[in-house]
Image (cartoon, rainbow, N blue to C red; front, side, top):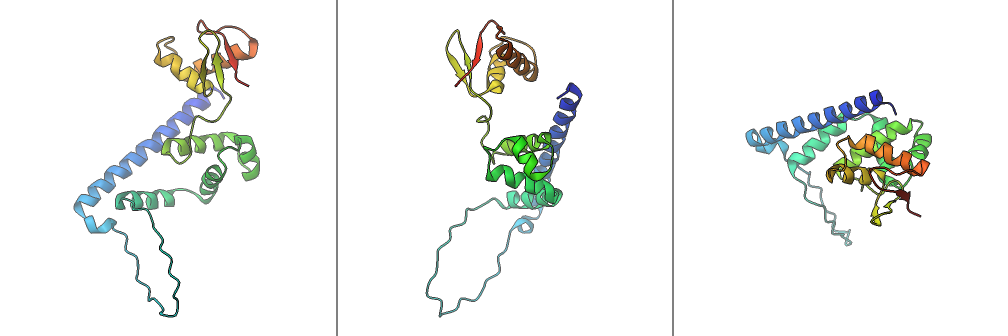
Length: 187
């Protein structure tokens, strides 16, 4: 992925976050002004006496503003985007390439929506990729991204996380040291 593609992708994600934030702020204002407007009413259905079997279904209680936000966001998404999100949620362990071939889209599109799902907390992140070992202190990381983020947080480098991750990948691939450490894949 080129730097230009990465910057475009990051700006798309940032724009998406800004839109969601604006919607949340709008819904909070709307709830203060019109509290009954966000309530969801369920119609009552007559209960037949012949049906003796009744099941208790416990539905989780959601904040009405959150439900309204989901409804708005649902209308913004296209059917193909909903299909991608549903496929990621249904099988989060499948690779981007496999999902892309199943859904006839690019792996980059799957990666974009996978990141959005992780950020939204729908899918657990960090489990993708191979584990990485920092040989000198035997410290293990979930993946290259986690190792790169740790190096930046620890002040070992002032570079951005994406370039540190790429440097770690090249160091493992070529067998050289990076950031004063030797790196290897686990397993």
